[in-house]
Length: 306
Length: 263
Image (cartoon, rainbow over all chains, first blue to last red; front, side, top):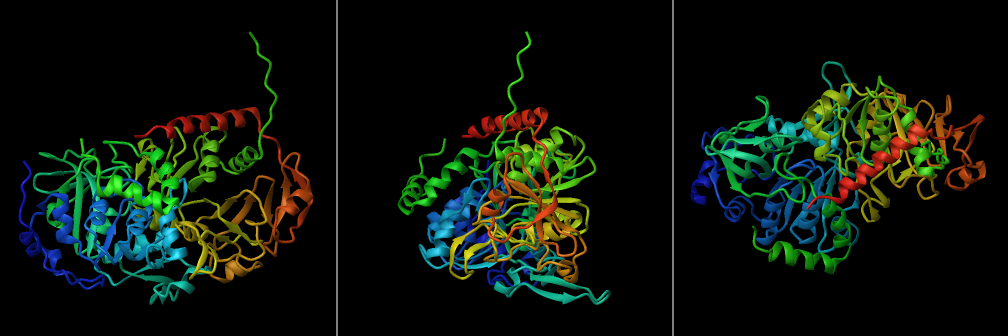
């Protein structure tokens, strides 16, 4: 049912592999090519390279865990990882030594506490040094929007009277040419690759996202290339509403069908968030050896999927 | 059969949550943080303010969860919300444009002018403890008309000087906040497990205006890292009513049962 095309064809669809996180207009955006349906390992191998700037988004909902695990298994290193809420998936990527830099706005285990692998990297440089660029949610949302809109920077009312601008030189300001007001600016986020999870795609590669939609649409449009993992492929999308978020097929680079690909976060209409696992992760991630053991058992040598 | 009413005993955390809930009204549009703020806002909705509009920063508008969410983006939020929108819409059309009356915040550290630290303990480059960071708080604190802060008191948390100012309260005090070009009111109350503090006129320093039942002034002073002052007309916070306490405990019990589930 699912057609597979070669990775060569995929590369040809968007020949912009040197975008490198800057904000220049990407030639690949004008493509009318349909996405390639690829097995997850092939999609990740084709799109994500060591040193890439990667954004895996999903605001608590639809977090692309399976794709993140594939990046870890392939041993891809020195990534610049962008994500508003690093969550458990970036805790795992950081702990596994895949990250060189993290751009984020809230790095905790939601409702539970710390991300201990992220803390170990920042506080003690384990497993290696981690450069951080820290923002607020409002700024990152605006920065993705600017990236999606092909603008070099985002403007917002923010960062007034606080310390973040003193530790992040990318937070600057501009004077409004009409009113003279001073407004905060941040550079557009333009990842080389966006990775998101969605409920489903149709056979042409149109993608449907429903529920808490977060920042995924902006992230996908901001990125040079977009990999979408989906719960299933269907003949017709049949969205719950005519206004549901649909990424048209030609805005997506590759689609991989990965049922359960957002677990232990959730996919609205498919399965619930495992709050129990988020609580359990606190103890697993506190201890380096327990973390590595867990990764061996669940990421490097996972039990066969049902 | 008529059972005798059980004695109305409560713990300090419950007093804090009830005191926070009472500050909210049916007219409020409230941006809800996870944890204590979420408890207070939903308690208000389930008791005296059924028409309060709750917005979670994950994008749910008119949120009416059955149980408290563990995370900011739990499915229970979306299921019964009026609508769910994208993050840029939340932060720009709602928060930045001034469509939210109340923001609720907490933190790891607070100072006498209700500025907050949720970023680091120690210094920024080599922190002793790396905390989660800013999230939505800095813009919530400046974009919402009023801000309530809920925090349990201790000398480690109520400090003379923040290690890092993540979020603006009243800045350096006095007119500093306004001088920075911020025209929203800012923190109007810090609700703790021992007392309620409110900004003093002119100085905008947080002073104790209400002690919770059974709490002594000395106890509050001990739990605060700055030289805490008390209002001349110090009140006692009314104890939780039976209705408030039952609604709060039912909500927590439902929540606990729900969170034990999941694969």
